[in-house]
Amino acid sequence: MGRTRTKKKAHSKADDPSIQAAPPSTSSLLEKAQTLIIQCDYDLALRFIRRALEQDPKNVEAKEMLGVSLLETGELEAAKQAFLSLLPPNPDAPSPSPPSAHLYLAQLSEDDPRGALKHYQAAINILHAQLKGKERADDEASRKDESELRSSIVRALVGQVEVWMDPSYDLCDEPEAEQNCEDLLATALQIDPGNSEALQTLASVRMSQERPDEAKTYLEQAWATMQDIDLDDPKLPPIPTRLALVKLFLELSLYTPALLVLHGIMSSDDQDVEAWYLEGWCFYLMAEQAQESGGTLDDLTWQELGKDARDCLETCQVLHRNQEHPDKPLLEHVRELISKLDSLGIAASPLDEDDEGGEGEGDWESDDGSVDGDGDVEMQ
Image 1 (tube, rainbow, N blue to C red):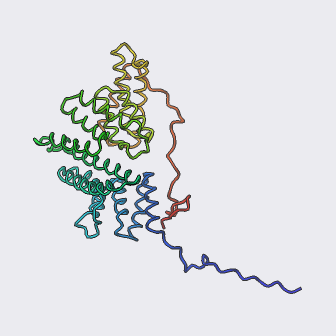
Image 2: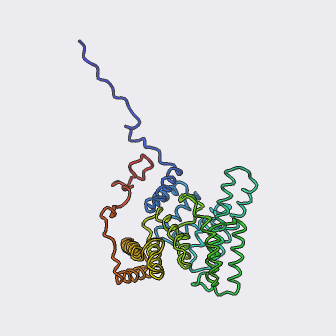
Image 3: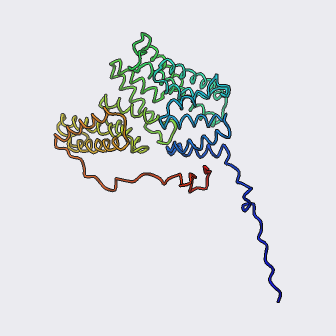
């Protein structure tokens, strides 16, 4: 019997240290960054975005995502520079400029209200040009895009109204301020009739004019427009806008719609400090009204409403501390309301240990700095 011949080991490319895997594409890096932004992991998103910009320094999407992530991490000046890089006179700026860059810069122009107005107007002009192109098309996708463009224009117009109305600026004292607000909102409702954000802002203007009956009418119209919109529908106003709506409802003692709006907000984000504060404030006001009207409101006793208020306010206080929330006056009011409820004998419900859940999903980043678990792009 002959000796068995030793088999030669097949040579694989994977065994050759001189051959390296191809680097991830720019598009795959940005796709991962977008996923991380949605998950609010902005620090890790920045690593992918910067890697993408190393590969493609002129990439418009990457620059915009860079600005958004820097804004969310509190690097405001760096975010501002990222958005400015998308606008003339930067030689690499796209043409036309992305309206979103102007909208972000408007929000970053807190110390320059007239500059904010100019950025809003620049965004409106670009969006109007895009809208004309969509209006000439007659397919479902174009109609959807047209609706989104109209909403974006309205939000920019509302942004201008908010700048004119802001009491921290001298603009609100200008003789043309009130008429400018009326004209801007008339334009907004002409572009998108029944738009809930425009109606809500018009209600806010009417409140500032001490015309509460008209304000109530516009608020009810705004609520009728948005109450059936799904929580994941882009047509739904952003959370800060809905929180402002709740405040207007509370000013007008419209407690039921206020609670419904807050329920929707908390379904999306149950860690929102202001939402818990406003819900506690709403129940507190309802308890006061119940006391004044015989002890009950909507079949609930004032004590039951007071306990609901106390529970919400206690939760708000905990979240405020854990998140190191910057709004100190809000916390002071929460403590004042808790003190009043305490004096009325309203105690908080016992804490359920099951409600003290841990931190969310597992870590994205492993010890060596790669992204694990899904076989996607890894940062080296």
